[in-house]
Image 1: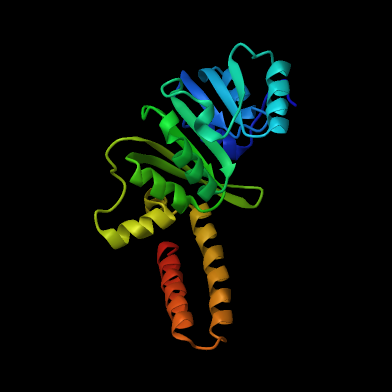
Image 2 (image 1 turned 180 degrees about the horizontal axis):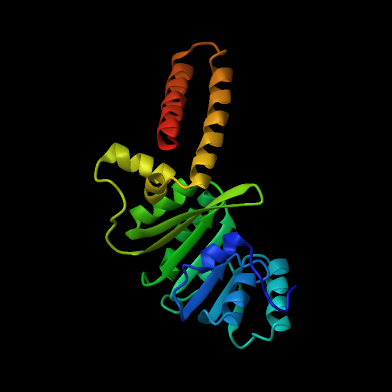
Length: 238
């Protein structure tokens, strides 16, 4: 536990998208470091720290007590967004989980959102699932970031309810933008290029293994799909 809370670069980037003076909900709070940091830095007015399991919830309670912020941070036990009532917070952070899980949390808990909150989401993998959920549920992707830390690369997605502006109107191009990230594709930061070059090499290895297979129509279809993905990865990293 920390009396003066510090965050790694990944979480500092997440926090940078929280509007000044927000009422924050940090879902899957893990020791409540994000809410504690935000309160200590004067970034938010108050916060909710949500945890689904008793052990992490108790750890969060201990951290909040240590920094004497019990009157500002409400630690709650519950599944995802179900710890909230609609309209009680203005920003939601969900960080450090798989994208599929984040999308599930959003879907299962969307009745607990008013639609006025800013969502700041940091999937470790499968960011495409988060983007698809946001698009399907009327959220505009405001910004994206990509951060490398300790040999790992993380994407951060920022969204609010509204008309989507970042995606192409052309369906195939939009599908690729959902996969790679529309803003990230255009900016091509070094971490973005590194991520997809690494992923391309993984797919190339899989392709080589599959080409040694039985040549069935199903297998050939999968090979064609992977080849197209490799081609696109080459395109976005050049």
